[in-house]
Image 1 (tube, one colour):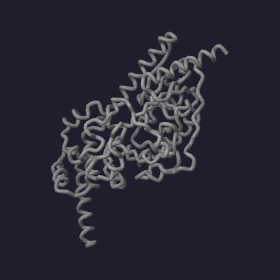
Image 2 (image 1 turned 180 degrees about the horizontal axis):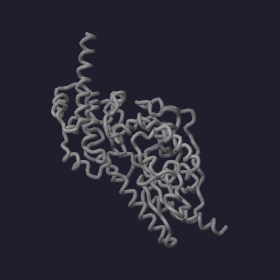
Image 3 (image 1 turned 180 degrees about the vertical axis):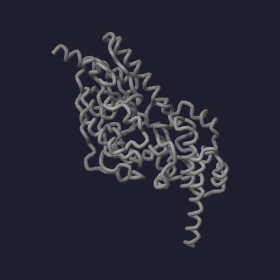
Length: 361
């Protein structure tokens, strides 16, 4: 009984600290991720991870926390909202094919470092309350089954689009974890509230959500524009539209996101007008400009080559204008074969549409 009281009091104190450090949700999970391990293994066996070899590199360490960090008993799971306040309307930006759409999570500063620092400070505060204890902080920085942990801790449930959802906050949030050797009573796992809704499945431009709770990453626009290093398969290029970094469609149509509130975090505020930028302007950035203007941004990790590749596709899906043609032809001799290929594809789309228009008249 005494141990239970101590555990409950510590959890209350951690919850207060979580709020103090800007986290909107907190829960505790044990290390039994058997259900999520089985689902993850089946996903991997079907090759749905594509080129993301790191997803399978570490074996069972991802789903068995004590194998990753010995002596782990409890996992503290945290949620932080990121929806930028005052960002341009997503649908309007996607409908304007002279503009570029960038996933809302990437409009501000990269969350990884900021959240890790916050969680490290939070762990230090816990240590001040109870004395030294074993802990490791993770924010998408190690083989961690973060959505399974979050669901098991009650922070949210895994939706049919495979993102985590919380009934008061929707799905516009990041996750972070503290693995610890503390024995803290786990919270009740979150229950699923997707019901019969299939909005996310219907809305996916490339049919990447092949069935409820099953995502084939190889078809996902976020994967194609961020993770994939080579050429984007031709079959998906038109469906990408003007999405040059990520895709939010499945979240935008989710009914639970009507309850989502913009984040108050200054790090997540829109930078460089990336909420509705001009495609040609972005395409004309030199590699030096790309690196400088996107300093501290998660977008920087894809590099200038993939940046140009993605924008070439978006320009090809847009309206043919003298400015667009000039911009594309201006880079048609780019040193990257991948960039050249996508530029030629974009220019070919203009020719195809011109022929179709001519025949229709």
